Length: 297
Image (cartoon, rainbow, N blue to C red; front, side):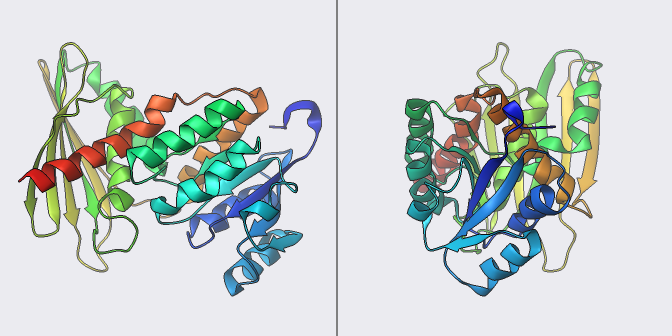
């Protein structure tokens, strides 16, 4: 696909500690898989990591900070692994009129997520963020199965977590499982009321959608052994039967990671927000409600 009007749109990258940054640079600058967009600058100074990324993609400039990107780019990718850093990088870019794609999770607090959304709304620019699990083949498989289950009553999903990692707690890994579940269900609104059971580093969350009738979501996040394969699984229970399936960690993350970026670039080409703001905030909101429930127990 090409950028609107055929003109090259310049991208900047800030927050390169995430391995997904390699995929983004490779996708646009090396594979040239989405025409009309190219990384031209990386923020964060002359670190070894930034130098290697610039060499990988032939990126012309490495600048000191976000403010130095503003006059150099049209679009930006915020790639910090810790979602708590996303607001401070994204809001100045959005306020300056730049479209911004943000590595998952969008944020680790609802306040930060809403500040990001409001900056995008005020500047009338596109903001995007997504887990690669939204593009898992299992999503379509479960949706197809749901049509044969009658009235869907329960979606039970399970996936990995590791709250000991210094990236914001359960939301770092857990957002994959949450966004996967939300995509299967068609991204409904969820109730603020959640029940949480915790054993060591593992948690089980019980919530429900605001649909009529509501669908119960049971989500188990389990700290896996070091070296074990990351697995996700799901079971759907309806009035007409039960369907269960599992999916392992994809051997190549390139497709699901870059698919999210591609959908964002589609929206940039249309110059219109395509992902509803509520859908972006929903995973952050659910994890904030999980934290509140944990504190209350």
